[in-house]
Image (cartoon, rainbow, N blue to C red; front, side):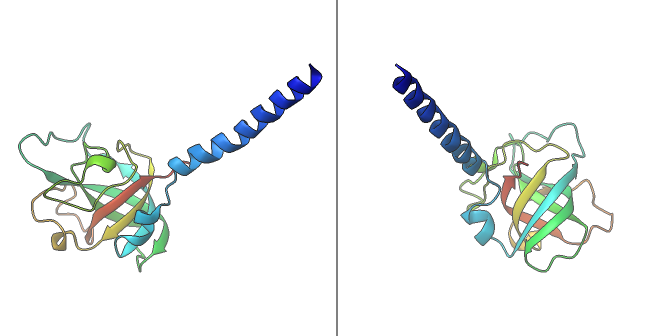
Length: 157
C-alpha cells in the first residue's frame, strides 16, 4: 500500500511539473509570428482606450488607433517613448481578425484593455499597409507616424 501511495505522489508531482509549463507556452507573448513579421517588434503598455467601447464594425471594417508607452524594442529602430498603433477590427480577437480584405495579421490577444502590455510586430507607415477607414481620436495631435499592427500578443507576467 505504501508503494502505491509513493507512486501516486510521484505521478502527481510529475503532472504538476509539466502542466504549468504547457500552459505558459500557450500564453506566451513570444511566438514565430511576432518575432519574424513586420519590420519593428516592441513590447508596450496600452495607455488608454479613448472610448468606453469600440464602434461597431457592422457596416464596414476599420482600423482604430491606440496609444502605447514603449517598454522594450526587440527589433527595429524605434526610439520614441510613446507610439500610436492602428489595429484592424479591434472588437475581434486577434486570432480571428484576418479576413479576405486584410490577410496575415493576428495574435493571441482577445480583448483590448487599458494597462495591458502587448508584444507587437509592426509596420510603418500605416498607409502603406491599409487603405480604408481609420478612427484616430488623436488626429491633430503631434503623434508622429501611425504604426500598423501586424501581430499582437498579450504579455502575461
